[in-house]
Image 1: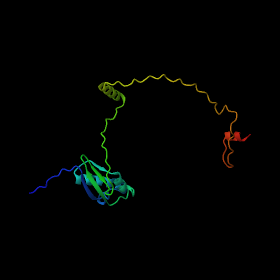
Image 2 (image 1 turned 180 degrees about the vertical axis):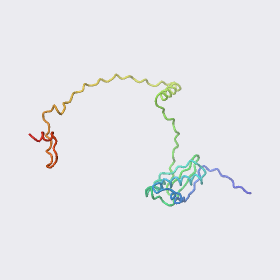
Image 3 (image 1 turned 135 degrees about the horizontal axis):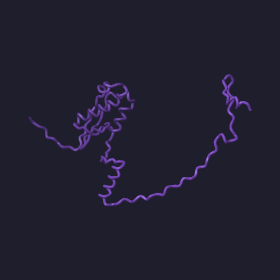
Length: 176
């Protein structure tokens, strides 16, 4: 049996028309667009033989443009397989180069974070600037505000509507 020579290309580019209706009809209406996005990811992972699939912003907007209950029945996409991952875009758009950033270690809080900083400081042999201790600020004495009872000018309450029950306090206010 003859075998085809394998050409090692760095970037493979293909166009697909991905059927979505069979997939998103399996879920309730409010989950259809999210299921369509998952269907695109699964389809591309299967056909390009990779797990790391990155769906472009325009494809996502195209799926969601009619809301979460009404995605398109099929979508045409352009797929490019790069070294580590696969990118999915609409066919009429140019690909933008994305920069892959390495994830830095999250800083730990509390005692573990302080120890981690000290170890890093000792390794680099560059002592950090010592923090200057600030003198505690003096609090200004608070002025006492006069209470409403102390005020001589109190606003009279409005007279109640006729036919309503009056409480003792309302009767007292009403009698000037």
